[in-house]
Image 1 (cartoon, each protein chain N blue to C red):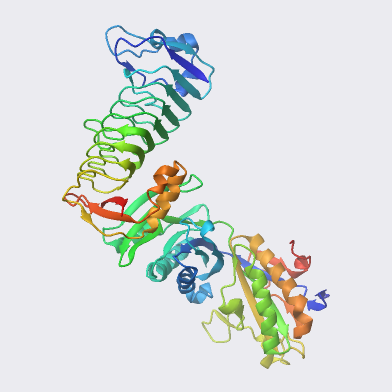
Image 2: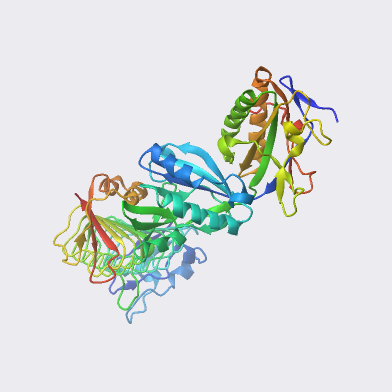
Length: 264
Length: 311
């Protein structure tokens, strides 16, 4: 396992887009130390910020985290990255595969546009986790995002496919959702604002938009399949689907093929 | 050519001639085993011969809730056609008319294979734009795509596509030459049960048994097939009859399977089961149907099936 040990809190935002196990496996420690990661005029390199130990494996651990470490694992396509601490914005943005985990919390736009692999945040996530960055057509796009703690507002904004599992989340979860699935213990106000398609399952939520209509408590085969799929990830979320579920259809202000399930 | 014997019954030293076909499997589930079976029975109806029905189909197995994708009771159906396009057409018609229409039913792919056949992705148009696609990971970690089509009892859930296998074989067969109809029917029924127990094999004819075995062509112009006069007891004594004087009835079983080994295993199981009780029920001989070996690539020689099936 290769390790990057944080020397000290960075003086500026650090862009780790190109720091993946695959990239590091072809470099010596001296070469890796020269990789540019700074975003200011200091010209910081990887060696300036981290103490580097490489073993050419497909596993990389960041020892020590900071909210200034941006785009961690953004180019990950295979292998494992683990961060022992916090990360900044755009964790795993556009990630295509592999496993990315953070023991602390993440900034905004975690997993934006990620097409594959699994991203786990053991702490909290900022706004628009699994959401679309400014100007992007889609948010989460096929990857799985697991947030143990709380996610900020607009969780899964414009997400297109994939799965988001979250403890609790703020307002407007699943806003402008194109498709995909969000499962949450608790959501804030107005979940599914402007959603076209997609599924939101929530233990509870705040206020509901008037453009969502109740369609009863149908016993659907789909919820059985979803429960089986979730059981692989975590029993707590699967249990949400075991009892009777009330289904709301929306957002009827748009396409209206989305749905919100809550315990009946 | 000297005939063989098994359990004291004469076994003609010949072979069954079978053909390459396109084959697929789907799993149909429902809230109760009864309704899963109703759907499966409807879908596999009028599917005895690919020539006249467009497909040959049958029920491969009843599945427990633990064996199905959605944890409900289910049935595994096998469907065979001449080639993938014909198979697809029959699959869509039969799922559209018999599974979609049946209360509570859902349909899933039942076999892996190289050829993709769009199923839910085609039937979704019945949903008139209200159908929803969902991509979910199953318990094995494989990602599968489903269509949820609004219907009057809730939703019809159908997997987006199923797979056709390479190497499916249709037309394995055995002919039981008996003395009396009722006794020979018992022998054939026991053979059917033994063959059906082989996974991945079905017997598409009524109860697994066919009484109107056919030969290629006929004396009437344009007939693709006509009665197998050599094995008709009322035509005994004529030139060309293959029946011994004591034979009064012939019943045939036909076997289709997803693999050639499945046909062979099912024929072996049927042969042994039939001959084991054959003497008690007046079985005269067992033989097999072929067309001289020039039409079908698969030849199942009865001589190779005399060894008992492995337990």
